[in-house]
Structure formats: C-alpha cells, structure tokens
Length: 480
Ligand SMILES: Nc1ncnc2c1ncn2[C@@H]1O[C@H](COP(=O)(O)OP(=O)(O)O)[C@@H](O)[C@H]1O
Ligand SMILES: [Mg+2]
Image 1 (cartoon, protein in one colour):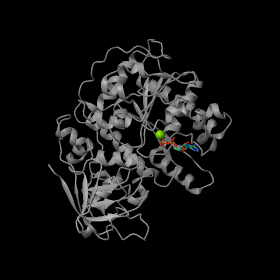
Image 2 (cartoon, rainbow, N blue to C red):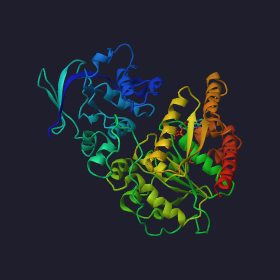
Image 3 (cartoon, rainbow, N blue to C red):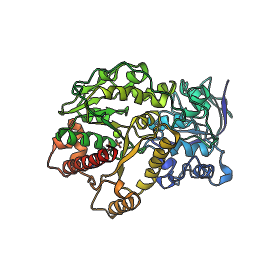
Image 4 (tube, rainbow, N blue to C red):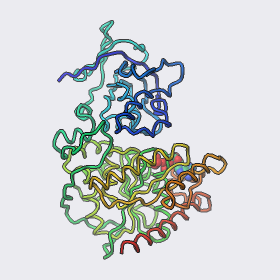
C-alpha cells in the first residue's frame, strides 16, 4: 500500500523514559474519553528537560511533529500505556529509534498509536528538530527531504498490519478473529473481549509432578497483576507462594512475564521451549510444561523470552482472550493444587488479559508511592470491564497489597491511609516493608523466607500468607 509518513522531525537522544514522555501526574487521564485523550496529547513529552524545545506548546501545535527520531532504549522506565497514547494523541505517527525498551515497543503495537521503527544506524545525531522527512514504511526507509539523504530502517514485519489496523483489538476485529464492536468508542485501550467463544476441547492433561490427582475443588487461580512494572508483582508471587507452601499448601506458579523473573526467583535455569508459549499456541499439554522447583510444594510453569511473541501470535487465534483459560482449567481439573498464582507482565496486553480471563480473582500489589491510586483505578476499571463484557463475569478482587513501604517517609504513610480510605477492607492489613533481604533473595534463586527467614520482609510475607488463607476460608464459606 506504500504507506508514507511525512512531516517535521523532532529529535531526541538516548534513554528517553516514560516519565519524560508523559509524567505520572497525567496518568489519571483516561484515553478512551476523547477529551482526556486530547489532553494527554498536549502533555506529550512535557517531562523533557528545558534544553529541548516544547513538543506541544499549545493545542494548536498538535500534529506538528509526526516523526520522532530517538537514540537507544526509547521508552524505558516504568511501563505505561499512556506513553505511546500521549505521543499518538500529539500527532506522532512514527518513532524511529536505534532500539526500544521492550514494553514501550509492545504498548505501541497493542495500542496501534504509532510505528515503533528501528533504524539501522544512529539517526538522532544526523537529524535536527524541524527537518522535513518522509518515511516509506514498505520500503523501510526514512529520507531527509531537503537533501534527499536516505537511511535504512528495519522492516516492521508482523507488527505493521496491527498498527495499521489501530491496535491489537482493532486488528483482531478487522480480520474477523473477534466480533465487531457493539458501540463505537474512541481510541482503543486494552479491553475485554466481547464475544465469548466456548473453551476449546483439550485432551485430559496428566497430573503434574507435585499434583497427584485427588478429588477436590479446582485450585483457585489468582492473577497477580498491575500494569505498572516494579510494584512487587513477581516478588509477591514468589514469596506468597513460598509462605503458603511452608503452610503445606500446594502451589503452582505460572510465569506469564517474558522477563522470567518469577522463574529465576524460584531458582530455575533458563530452559528453551519450556514456557507456556507452546501450550498457548500449539495446544501442547500444559502438564508437560510444569516443573518442580527447589521449594517443596511449589511447581512452576516457567517463562522464557519467546513468550513476548505470544502477544501477537495469540492475537491471531480464535477466541484468543480465552486461550489461557481453555488450557489451564482442564489441566487444573486433573491436578491437586490448592492455589495457582499467575505472574503477569507489566502491561494490560494480551497475556495479562488472558490471565485475567482465566483467573478467579486478581491480586494487585501497589507500591507505596504518590501515584498509586491512579494506577489502581485503571485496574479496578478493568475488572468491571471483564464483568460487563462477559469475558470473565466471575472475576473478583482478591486484595490490594501495599508493597515497599518505607516507614521513614511520611509519604508512604499517607499513601497507605489514602488507599485504605478508598478501598477499605479490600486492602490487606499486612503491608510489605521495603527490605533489602527481599530484593537480594532473587539473586540466590530463593524466596526471602528461605534466604533470610528472620528478615522483616520474610515476616511480612508470612503474615500475608496467613491473612490470605483467612480470607480464602471466608471466600469458601461465602461460596459454599
Ligand atoms: N519489599 C521489597 N523490598 C525491597 N525491594 C523490593 C521489595 N519488593 C520488591 N522489591 C524489588 O523491587 C524490584 C521490582 O519488584 P518486582 O517484584 O520484580 O516488581 P514487578 O514484578 O511488579 O515488576 C525488584 O528488584 C525487587 O527485588
Ligand atoms: Mg515482574
């Protein structure tokens, strides 16, 4: 089709982080509300130092720079979908950088806001802000119009059609993978699937190593999720699992994050082809993916980098939001775990949505920091969407966990109060303190309770496990 993008270039350097792209104070703007989407655009790149010319000095200048040229590691920092959304809302159609922080790249594709293109050479030293340029997507080239100099880009490959369609959901709709939208809406954001295909038939899965079949209720599946990275999801999965295992509960951890931190945190070496990926894509039995960990009573379905590709591959499949559920539930019917914890990646992409569609409940760790509440509102809205769309009408909120609490700062105390005021008893009474033993335990491939059982972090996670079980007992009473 020969898509071209033409206009002025805005030039940036290396390591442009998401706080510079859209500072955290604007994350309460909801991209699906057209007015707020527009506002996000006006704040794009307002976190840059003053040495850069203002990117959007006024609303009238939205669209002035359809092309950004950056250096290395574009979009690093905390994961936020608002980053590509803000740029898209500011009229950016493509970023050309040497390489990307992976999560920014994925968010750009999932939202379809812009092309994250990679240059073959470093272009941010060759272009100047205000240069007129043209990108030819098909030919994978960028040309400086004044001089005719042309530079090669890496072809966007499979992501091209997804962005062209306007994001993963729009793409899936456009090729008939999912039903058309019932209502027209503004720019897409990750959303629950609206059609509800029947779960696919799966050959009965043999029981996993640690899970001899036994007649009992299916294990409860808890997705540990938060679209933000670095809030303590993985730490909570590993340590809560370990503390429950010490209390003789049989736990399965499923590492759905391509970064594999839960896998390494539980002491597993990298093993090619071992992740849930093949089960998701090729229907290989989930039971074959289960590995024992060094911790008694904990099994794991490990992760590997390949899983990053699952976002796009799964999106091509029928009933793609139900994929994980359709392999997980039959497997659990034949195994004897008490709890399954799914460690989600830091985005609301396809993998997280699959986890939430399969989960009985969602546990949301949040860091005791200033913008905790805004992030929470995104996640709680998501639970409502899962309900309302029918994608997972039964999902509940397992609990909100305050992590990395630093008693020396007043702010942390204020955040705890504020979150409790809003979410009351949905917040665990146990608060996890910031504790160096917790952060060093993963380098030993161990949960903190085995690394230093007397540390404040270990104590807190043991408390959490008890509180978790108390709530679980109440949950069982309420539902029996
Ligand atoms: N209670 C804690 N005290 C100190 N460091 C922590 C604590 N919880 C998590 N960390 C560290 O913070 C970083 C992010 O935590 P992690 O669990 O990986 O977050 P997520 O999975 O949400 O990205 C990790 O380096 C981890 O070791
Ligand atoms: Mg993690």
